[in-house]
Image 1 (spheres, rainbow, N blue to C red):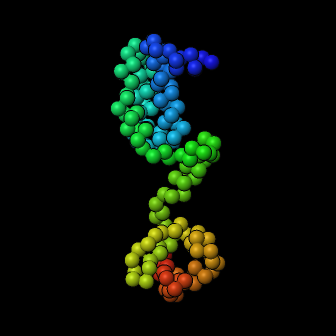
Image 2 (cartoon, rainbow, N blue to C red; image 1 turned 30 degrees about the vertical axis):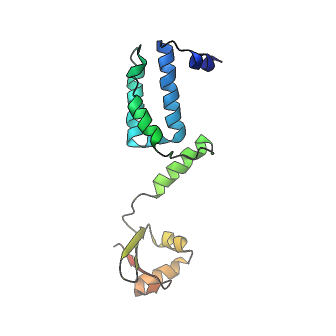
Image 3 (cartoon, rainbow, N blue to C red; image 1 turned 180 degrees about the vertical axis):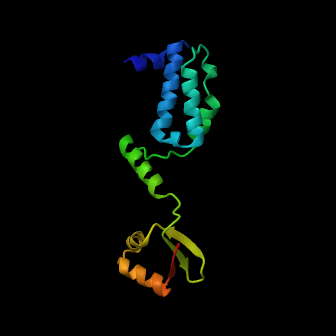
Length: 152
């Protein structure tokens, strides 16, 4: 009820400006764009402006807001926010560059990727760990497509 009356109001008072800033921040959070550098800077700018007594709506960062809205959403808008947060955290946690583990090369010795370890490599290719270890030790072709080499 309060939100509706504030949205319909055309009076540019402090409450109305803070409400517009709140709606802008909520839109960015729902789409997950606060994980980007631009989104983070936008949220910091809104926080900085919320601590001052704004009387002019033009002081809001409209250019930054329009740039952010042009970006594709990070979150799936058909899923609950908590699920989106968990999925994003899992994807960033496990998609970090891996420094140790098993290097995977194609038959022409072109680097393809690094997997975290022998067990993770076995799980990735859906084979037994002993098979991965055997191909690493013997330096033989793995699954007729790859060479496996240890990182150390």
